[in-house]
Amino acid sequence: MKINLSILLITLLFSNCIIQNSYAEEIMSFVISFVYKHNSEEICPIDFSKTEHKLQSGTEYKIFFKPIIKNTYIYIIKSVGFDKKYLFLYPYPDYYDYCNILNNDYYLPDQKDWYIFNDNKILEEFTLIVSNKKLRELENKIETYLIHENIDSGENKKAKKELEAELRDLRLKNSKFVRKPEEAVIISGGNKGSNDEIKKLAKVIKIDISNKVEDLYVYSKTIKLFKK
Image (cartoon, rainbow, N blue to C red; front, side, top):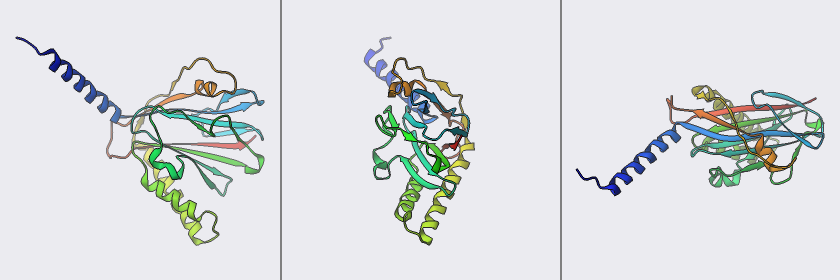
């Protein structure tokens, strides 16, 4: 029996594509590192498994991340002080449709800049939210908050309350799926203080969503920085 090799090859490639797409739909995966400069020189990782961390005033810190599987949408929100003034670090509200490019390196802040931890802020809290779909409702709540944030009125308080309610709801969805262990990313080379050195300290986080019940899956993580 003769077999048409061209048809066989096309069939195998098509089957492999289906398997890969099926796997991608069951996994969300991204690379992330949260680092700070010790004595303005050595770069140290912030333990991502812990929520609360103490830093000295003037400590510089930076975030690196990269989505590595399709349909991994990342949101990073910062709040300052115990009264929580919100800052939206990623994605930028005007660029929701141009974010999360696969395998693209993202740094917060950009280039060679670093955030500085300040005594006056007392507390800085970072909320990382990762989902398999764009979170349109969260984006709408963010835009409403930004419209009213500098207006001392009932609308300001209402917008903030609705944003916080949405964030709480997204955190609750975190318990709906099983998370695989974190794996260290090995990237050699790089000088102290360079972006390569920051990438070297990154971790791959894989989230197994194969036990899905709904179409939307959300993973959330909170990091709090206090004065040492």
